[in-house]
Length: 594
Image (cartoon, rainbow, N blue to C red; front, side):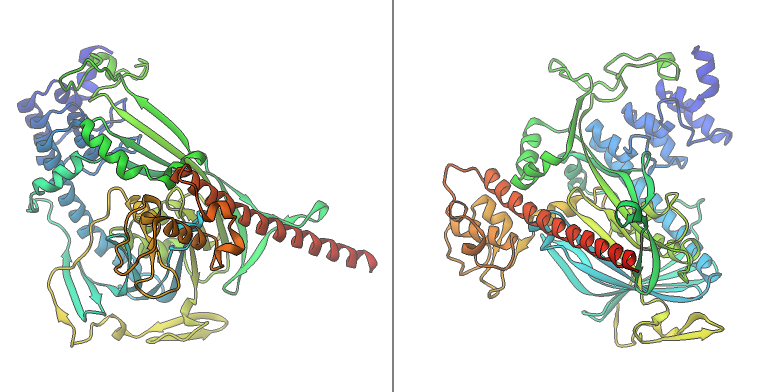
């Protein structure tokens, strides 16, 4: 592609490539160019500028409102690419602008969502979240929670008791999130019922002509990103297909239906669901890489790695390179902007050191066409409200907005992490099954609805007011939760001090609980026994595992535990299938006799 053609088709990209800052400023000011135009390699002008390490061009683009939250086709964001350069000034600039744009987007989005909800019928519904894992040690510490949702007009209230993780411990409490909409504004309240405190934020439609003044990220926050791997986790939706589940055997197989909370549902499987985790480390020093290996590569993850597909790529990695180059392959502008030129794995930017892990799952959907809620009009806006600060809701939204078959997803099973699945079930619609305070169930001509008392959206006058809402920032790498889950302690049924953590048992360190005097082998035995159930170790664990040899590595010991637990699950599944086949046979014989 000739230079003149590139300059005509991608004028801003061309100026960014050559870092012509003054001309770039003038061209953008003309307001005739698309700031978010994507080049043949999938980059916006800002993404290109950051990848090339052009600080001044980046500053100009951000000043004119370029999208700092943009993501390319490989699921890397502008912030990810800035960290990859290893330049702290660039990271700080992008981080500050990204947070500003996120706030502006939320300020515009929440009032619009509430206005959309105002036009839909009122309702009450409960969303039960259950987390499960095929790994028994992780499964035992997986919690559950029920989100209670009230909606009346443009007012929404969501109650939860599972707040998240803090210092490797599940956070529990009683918390309400209340959204109240009026013309052009929205009041957002986070109510802490345990502390009897409320954080309040009044959101107005953002004035894009007045840039928002945001706090400059601290040097510690920037340093933390530059000394940690760059990680992105996403569900690959390209190959997903939905198939109707079947029941019965031989010629008796038919479409499977199940009742969920009183509603007859068609059961579908989402096959070829791939959860992909990509990690980059090109910006890390050798010391940081070694440190990350010690923290991340636990014995449990080593075992889990057997079930994962690993792909490691080092783009043009060369040990002789002593200085940072943002075009190490000497790609010409003409070749870069010509979509017909195969770069053969070459790329601009710092040479990538990337590892990809892919885990395949089967999602499951229970769909009901008679469910009295609208997914698009009533439920998705609620999920959007929560997705701004809750990574699990963001994953749920990504999944249910696929082209799923007709019907309301009364129950959904989706992967959250490599070893963790979430099951979400909708129930007690309109408080029909169980009475709920401030909700009156109404039945008119066979059609059910409800009336929600407006007092539901008011905060008790005795609660303290603490100003701006205390909304936690959505984690960029929400799979940090997996790290916490793996390290979460396994508490036995004994006293508060009589406990041992899985992390301590594997690493043979002294437990944090005081007064715990068992030796290291005994700690490991207790962790193994915990993974296999609340039975005496002598009943279920062979002697050679109860008294592990010093020659056995921790990873081998863990492998034995998981293999035995998996065998137990396989036996249970085999027995269930056998019972189902026997039932089908009895049914068939009874019909033949008639």
